[in-house]
Amino acid sequence: MATRTRQPAKTASRARQAPQPRQVLGRDAWLEAARRALIEEGTAGVEVNKLAKRLEVTRGGFYWFFESREQLLDALLDFWVQTSTAPFERIATDPEKTAPQKFQMLVDLWLDEKEYDPKWDGAIRDWGRTSSKVFDAVHAVDDQRIGFIEGLFGELGYKGKEAHVRARVTYYHQVGYYALGVRESRKQRLELLPYYTKVLTQRDVDA
Image (cartoon, rainbow, N blue to C red):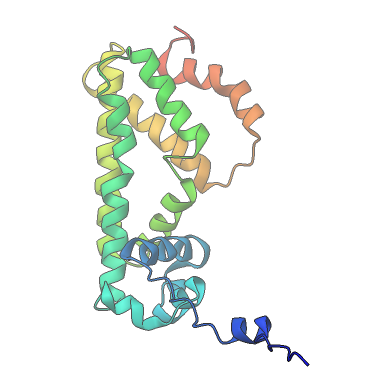
């Protein structure tokens, strides 16, 4: 009588399979988690344990990239400083665009909220209320952005203090829009755009 060869249970063999290695997160992942935490919780949320929980990893991985929480906070501020003026500079120095086109690109930058993230900007400004180092960094970035916008107004034909004041009014108007928590749909903002443009530049939006 033939004997049946017993096959090992597949479920048991699967259960005994070696666990997959845990994914190693890089520096950028910790920095992005810190950025999100700052936006959602302020600096109180930028704690190593809280970030590890967000990332679903142990806190030990953090110390491969940062010596301390303070070093992470410095890196977070540096990241904002390095990236926050880049879109404004790109628009202001585009050699293929006319001045009116550049102004429209600036408006689109604020409307689209992709390259420019008002929540990220606002979180840094809130942090600056309790840190003189951050406060100084914010003002330096504001001055750079205004400088780029002033150059744009120079291309529109305004010179000296008039170009500077128009740049400041344009910039402060937009920063204030977010600071005051104005709630308007994209459709509403687009409907008002020609009027804002005419007030700020004395030109029609498609001039």
